Length: 288
Image (tube, rainbow, N blue to C red; front, side):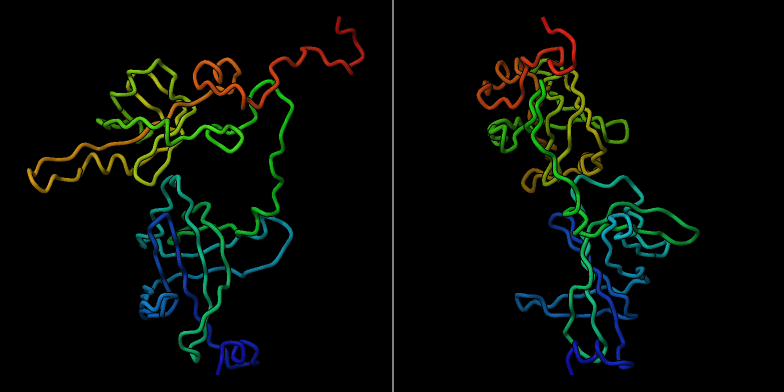
């Protein structure tokens, strides 16, 4: 008996679902079965799926992005689901749902794939919203534009700067404002605003910097991993002393030609047109 034969039968199907969540290097696995489920991974290793009272809505095929979303229902007390009630981290959480049948051991198919986009509480339940991975293919891409400011993303392909050459490693001494404000004394060696529009890296987590004043870096979104590292720092195994919490910061750009030349020496890759006339030559009025 195979998955296909059971799936196409009129009454023999006894489906169950496996839910795999991935965030960077972290993986969580759950099953809708009443007991833990063990399967064989691609490399031959055994994988355990934790039982959970989780269910999802109907999977539909549609050309409308919003209708392509999937909603998962969890108990309010479930610790994994509750983590999504806080602001989402900087690393996307992908979700893959596998479907199998009780009569066919070890054979499943990928039923749905997407990413978690939000969560809300409804009574005694947590509703987890996920967006299909195919929805990104139906969105219009950003095209190059004729504009005064640079059209390239800093450290991106068009910009050409290597962020690996721009990192400054500093010591995180404090956090504030819900972990969106980070104190890094080494940042005070640069002029105010030098890191505005740049990137902060802590481990595998990345944060966008939208403010810099002296040794204070302001992030666009909280990074709770930093506060946790300060509260419970790693300890030197030889001395027993707490190790410093280190983070990397890279400078930002305001996308102006003068900044591109003076700050980065990268004017040859500047993607804007600063000499655009102030008046539209096709507007009907004189530009003289």
